[in-house]
Length: 487
Ligand SMILES: Cc1cc2nc3c(=O)[nH]c(=O)nc-3n(C[C@H](O)[C@H](O)[C@H](O)COP(=O)(O)OP(=O)(O)OC[C@H]3O[C@@H](n4cnc5c(N)ncnc54)[C@H](O)[C@@H]3O)c2cc1C
Image 1 (tube, rainbow, N blue to C red):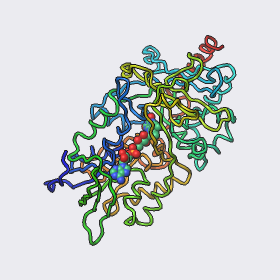
Image 2 (tube, rainbow, N blue to C red):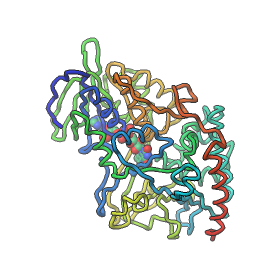
Image 3 (cartoon, rainbow, N blue to C red):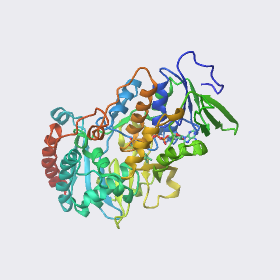
Image 4 (cartoon, rainbow, N blue to C red):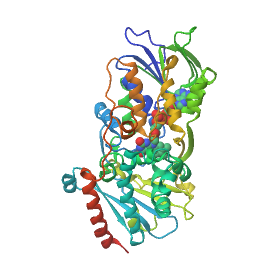
């Protein structure tokens, strides 16, 4: 790694990637196979790992990011290629109302090799419920049953999630089950979840074969610090603590893209590149381009909206459910007025690599009640894009301007799908394929298949494969376990 401008590459182009979240890391890794890549990151460490914390004898990923094999085919194949080991995380969860004595919904991830062999999945997830919420099971089964059908038929097209659910499900199911769960996945308010396009959330929850029942959430076993090293190792030049202040696209008078940045000591640098990949959030990309941005690009990037959220790393167990038996790896607490929920992850329970932690450590996303200040280890603010029905056309237009004048846009926000690690990776594969001679396979998804965006996976047909069998098993087991555990 060197700060000095590199010599002109003998082959390939000089490419600058701005931002080292998952999208920037993917772009830098892929492009450095054929080009000379400079990776610029504003934070003092690689972006995806910038909030991780060393505490209680371990390194804790903040935020904890998990994935599954069904929804994240591009991320998981890249991890395998890079030698990033990953394994099953315990994502058992409970939902409880803040202040009430017991959980109203529990969902166990049973890691059972026998069941796994039988149904071809690594993990079985069994809902354990109390009698009072038995009615939600029927709605839940209907939700994952009808979702793929509505995706196929287009019945959910043009509807917000709130509109879609209003005509089909009870308000109890919507506010107590769907909202707390999806506001965690999207890390946003209930209102923003309700405004999401229904097809995006259905695609995530039940669009891919088996995803909702195998539900084998995975975590990179050696943590994010190792992940980022694997991605960056091939990159020719990595400059940390460097904030890009200006990007000047190519023009008739300027054959290359100009990039200006300031380092941690406040020194300014200006260099020229053949191509620049902006892997920052849309609002930061807009800021870097500032006065050089075309009206169309400004409109597309400006249409991406964000919600700020807070993550607190702490040791305050008072935030967990009151009943010890209800305490799960993931604990969703709903406010009594149903207006919001928070999510507390009990880090020690997530996977066996966390056994090294010397005390119980929790991370709470968007806390709705106070965490004892003397028990707070660290606090972070994140921004997360939120999609609405208006996002589809804005993001389609963004893809049309992508690459014009040597400036490319990648990031989890940039595709019309859930803004998660997978979309960050996919957006970078697409751009890399425009700049590489050796193309890379992009694994598709349901929305691509449905809306003519190239080849993709088949949406799951109701009752197909593991889904149908799992439904039956879940139904039977839920009743058995409920009988045993119901108080
Ligand atoms: C609490 C929480 C939990 C989450 N859990 C999951 C999960 O379990 N699974 C999952 O798939 N996703 C999860 N996500 C979402 C996931 O983290 C994001 O989708 C993903 O990290 C976005 O990656 P990105 O590369 O698009 O953007 P970012 O990670 O935002 O990367 C952009 C980078 O650009 C840098 N940058 C910005 N401006 C400049 C500049 N001017 N110059 C230089 N560098 C700059 C930033 O410092 C940053 O490193 C979670 C998010 C949150 C907030």
